[in-house]
Image (tube, rainbow, N blue to C red; front, side):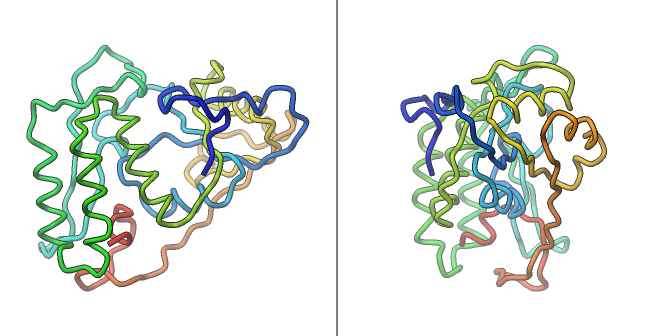
Amino acid sequence: RRRAGEDAPPDTGGVGEAVGEDVNRTIAILQPGFRPWLGFFEQFATVDWFVYLEDVQYTKADWRSRNRIRTDSPQGWCWLTVPVKKGPEKMPLLEARIDHSVKWAARHLNLLRQFYGKAPFFSRYYEPICEIYSRKIDSLVEFDVLLTELFLDALRITTTVVYSSSFGVGGNKCEKLLRLCQACHADTFYDGAAARSFIDDAYMLENGVKMVYQAYNPIPYRQVFDPFIPYLSRVDLLF
């Protein structure tokens, strides 16, 4: 995996390769997520460039700061949530800071050990996860990205990564996505199926960008408990 502009720090990204290039790329544009589901990684693996959309408004109790793991409870899963400090109204995601006054990290790691401790690859990945947790990272985006990189490495996904804040583009939801596509010299935008509700395909195409929507159907895999439950955090597959 490579970041455009090799020397760019994790919280800003780099866009040196985009300037002056006459190329056509397929890109995905998604907000960083906390241990995202497998469809997130399918998008990552499909495109030439992956844009972390982190200069948009932070939303509470969303996939940026929580996800589900498999358990032996009656419902079969539980939430793992990263507490975020209260910020100003309409706080940008890239300004979201983790609240380390709450003892959340130990709970996460204990639950992972409790429910996945006997999984075949637990010992391989648990310690790297613990190491990331031990850093007590303040930035939610940085924390999410570091955990995501662990899984990208495991899957050998080497897609180039950039950050939306590097481009400084604005506009409403659809305009901003178009401008990001143009800044990345992309002629194809690969987005999730839910994006059909707010993206104007004709508008995008008129401006040189073809929309392709994901049609991801989870394939059952071995889990620590039966029956199979789809759409869990990717650690469910990692272990």
